[in-house]
Amino acid sequence: MMVAIATATIGMVSCSKDENNGSTSADTSKASVIATNFVNKTVAPTYTNLAAKAEELVQKLQTLNASRTDANVAAACEVFLDAREWWEKSEAFLFGAATDFGIDPHIDSWPLDVDGFNNLMNSPAMLTSLAGDEGDEYAGDYLGNALLGFHGIEYILFANGQPKSATAINNDQMTYAIAVAGDLRNRCFQLEVSWLGDDAPAAHIEKVEDLELNSTLNGGYSYGVNMKNAGRAGSSYVTAIAALEAIVDGCRTIADEVGTSKIGQPYSGEDPNYIESPYSQKSVIDFYNNIISIQNVYFGGVQGQRDENNSLHSFVASFNSSLDAEVVAAINNALQKIDAMPKPFVNNISDARNGEASDACGELDEVLGKLNAALRNLE
Image 1 (tube, rainbow, N blue to C red):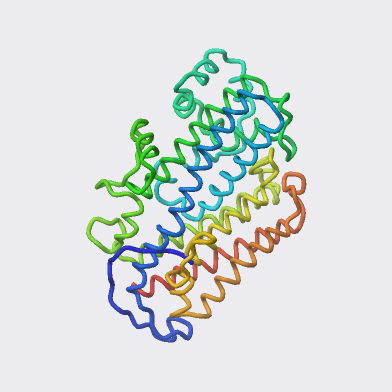
Image 2 (tube, rainbow, N blue to C red):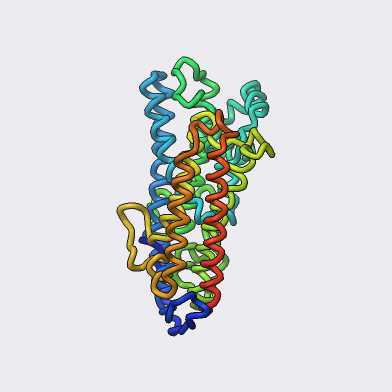
């Protein structure tokens, strides 16, 4: 299951038992294969599915706008949650395009600026612009992150964890939702094209180019090619091991964010309003899928497409089986502790089980830190 890689081949490195906790040697030539597998089996299917669901969401909202029925609301909500799932499963690799191009805060900032939303609903000029043929572009350019992305759409479609009644959604709200969903789709296309390059669907590439959205690194490489060519001239990764370290760093970042921010800020009382997905009440599912993103990375791909033989899991087990066992146990523990959180999180932020989940994410972060230290010893 897991990460793939380009063809950069690095020589064998022998590691003493003292350095690697009982292991004998690591075949670092595998690092390049793992990085390529990461792109092909984890990143590519995740962003491909995300882009497809974001595009379908626009279509479902347009159908709802044409025929305001509860069934059409439910259909839009279902696709919204599908897209949301793929996004949350991408958060272990927010490094790259999602960060470099500001896509993450653009489509996933919270809490929603409700006051700003109400002002928007009282602005005929802005609503007219959002309703135009280029309403998606207007939204992306002028609304600001606190009114964009998943949570703006969520606010229109859901209330108290359930799809809203069709009669509770007015025309101006539909105008807003369709425009914001169009911008969300565009940014998901941007993610897909940034990593897949010419392998992305032609229509998605064309849309990104028409919008003049950045999609390459300096030198014109896609993020996928850059990762696959780790250790070769032109790649930002000097060695293939350095690419693996970046991948693990991405996993550490989301483990820490889930534990200290997404769960920790509300649970500790630091910011009781810092609740992700409060309207659909899917916060715990979001947290769980964030850890699934780490699991997918470590085990070599998304469910159904994993290549465990070319995964970090297999590689680490080959030179430090005890460390691999620690990583696997920490991932499973975080998943179990999050799954045990009371739902919905927005109504149970002080429950002690949330603290246990937060701690489990912190422990996962620490173990992944040990993994990166072990990888650095292979350089």
